[in-house]
Image (tube, rainbow, N blue to C red; front, side):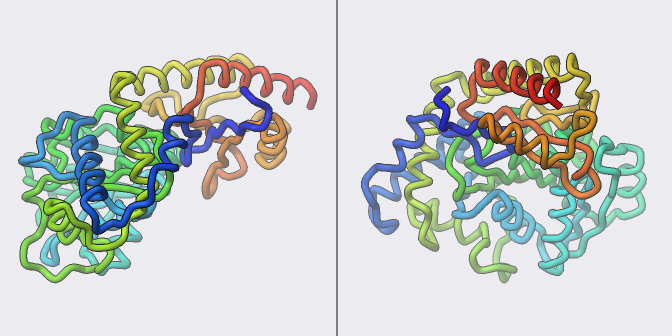
Length: 362
């Protein structure tokens, strides 16, 4: 590792490989030319291939914007005006889904949990039995607030029995955790380029069942209407200017991921790094926030004794490591470590050495 390279252990944006960074230097393109159309179509196909989805039934819809743009597009475009949404909240991003529904005047209710809790299936069933008019359920797959991986396998039969459409925020799980679109009855999944796919910030997407798009309804939003994007992208066009250079980086990142063995290989690599970190920190007396049900993408830990987050962060930054703070009422008690991006085992072994030195010198 060179001394000037910051190792980003925050949950996106991630460290880029040289290959992906160099892709940003490809020729300038007009978004109305055939070359852009080919680039866009290639990415849409690559995204479906990540989980082996067929383009006859599924579509990947590309947006210029962060993962939140994809979340907002999914919720505002796919819940019809006569629909009713249930949002499951057990962290900041579940609560963000509720904010989106509220802002767009969508009829919704929430099932709220403490941030460190897994989904209460009994409470969910009870709520659905009391609200038989629920048409859609929105849930965060990997809640990076805590590193909790919500169990979609448990939700699937509950939604399928009631014909409820499942909308998944896969922003920080797509490309590294299992997403079984068919068996879990996923109607749509929002995600982004700059987390587990190792692309550049600025492009996000929604993978959706084609028949989930509402027909002949007035969109709630101009810029984020998935129906408009899907229709035009199927024809090789785009309703608005896309971020061409980030598209270049994304197609390269997806190619790199495929060559490395796809999402399963990425899951395995992250798991190796996350286990290394967890074992190393635990041996220093630094305890994980969650003992079970965590993602391989990110884990949260209690701060070492005697350290404020700012102090711990700054000492690590001086050694070229960027950790991430807790949110809300966890801000003063935890830090988060993500192992996404172009990070090696050697990078994380050195991280543990640095943490040990910081604690020893305190």
